[in-house]
Amino acid sequence: MKDKYTQQELNGILANTSQRQGWDFSSMKTWRAPVDWDYLEEVKKYLNPSSSVLDIGTGGGERFIQLSNIFKNGLGVDIDPKMIDIARQNAHAVDNVEFIVSSEKLARIEKDFDLILNRHAPFNLTAIFNHLKPGGYFITQQVGENNMQNVKKALNQKHENPTITKNEILKNGLSIVSFQEYDVEYVVKDIESLIFWLKALDMLHADIATNKAIDNVEILNAILKGNVDEGGFVTNEHRYLVIAEN
Ligand SMILES: C[S@@+](CC[C@H](N)C(=O)[O-])C[C@H]1O[C@@H](n2cnc3c(N)ncnc32)[C@H](O)[C@@H]1O
Image 1 (cartoon, rainbow, N blue to C red):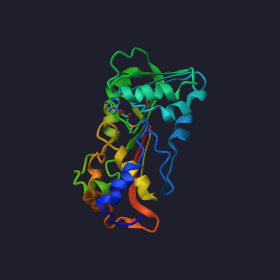
Image 2 (cartoon, helix red, strand yellow; image 1 turned 45 degrees about the horizontal axis):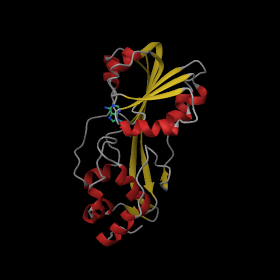
Image 3 (spheres, rainbow, N blue to C red; image 1 turned 30 degrees about the vertical axis):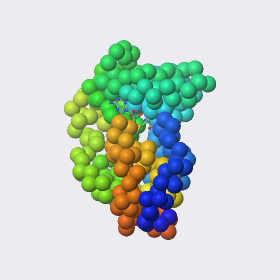
């Protein structure tokens, strides 16, 4: 990957960049330093064949559906009706998972759940507390405030407060089973993957809006400057994994 492009080169790459479908980034060529946990493996430890499970901000249900063979029934919610359409298509062969449009406030959801999941999406701890069965668990993986630090810096995006804290969990009546965090190197190996990624991130679906900015080569070059080595574009991945119990 070069560290500087012309507008013409960028236009050519953009013309061949496919649109993100749901929340599927599997086409990207990336490398990440080793991390302390795998989200799906952690969630599996809390599932059994009688579990009823809610996934808040499910996107296209890509990860939730992968768990469906180890729980009894699941409900995925998302504020974006387009995501819910994609999730229903992705789940066409699965009969124990439903998807409906709902915000993180969970209004009109009357059931309580054994497990509530929330990966990289907004959450409301009062609503979660009110929809967890006694002894039920809440598992969230959150994108940390320091994620993609060099991209945020190039876009002048302000430093934010922590995306989740122990205090707010305790204040909402839940107890903490574990609270983990990592911040590691993340490399995007080629320019096509990088453009696909930055095109896919907007404020409704992520914590950074690069989708429009990336049409301008000056912004792309500002993002690349000083951040490209022989492996590709180097940035960082910051995550929290929090498990709480009602
Ligand atoms: C980063 S995606 C994560 C999708 C999925 N959880 C995953 O990990 O693959 C965030 C999702 O949260 C949804 N979302 C954004 N704001 C929301 C809100 N206030 N209530 C519910 N869902 C929301 C977006 O539409 C998007 O699908």
